Length: 268
Ligand SMILES: [Zn+2]
Image (cartoon, rainbow, N blue to C red; front, side, top):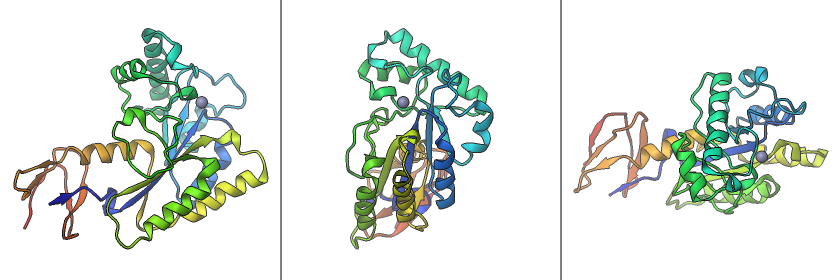
């Protein structure tokens, strides 16, 4: 039996961060993330650069290097109260602006003010958005069934508690499925020395581990989506990888496999 319980590089665990609004505290926050090898996604509003406390486009390439830049709506509008045509405008303009700034294809998103419904999801999907983060905390370590409603593990207020639980999970002898610690917040919420101490302690707790994949949001989306596309024969003896990513998995004897893009693997 094939079991889809390995992540990128055969790792069992992943950590990702998600920060909204692109404000000036992204600078010291990213400095910390870079120091500890933590990676994440920065959701910015490409129509709000006139605000002096926002990170300006000229700084994107150097500041957000090794992280992902993603949409947060052009003007941070609350999506649920917009007619669909304006949802499309808000997100398509944001994608276009961010793609012009970065020279990359932008497909990620977090909901401004956490606002979304089925109509919003339909409009965003039509605009080429493939995942969108909510503000509903799960306090759990699962992967989303529907990436257009990607509920994070916790806000950074609870990050130390959740990091402790996550590390305990990684140390369990019998481990049955991959786990993701997904923390979100706004960098402007770090005000006092204690706030900064908290996030640095978090980085120290989760960093430097061989079995943890430090990923951006889109990297996790891409890997899990590719993994879900593996084609498996009825007798479980053949696996075909139709995707562009190498995928890792095990069988129920805990034998580890990886399958390259386009490859067909014959097992046992
Ligand atoms: Zn926001």
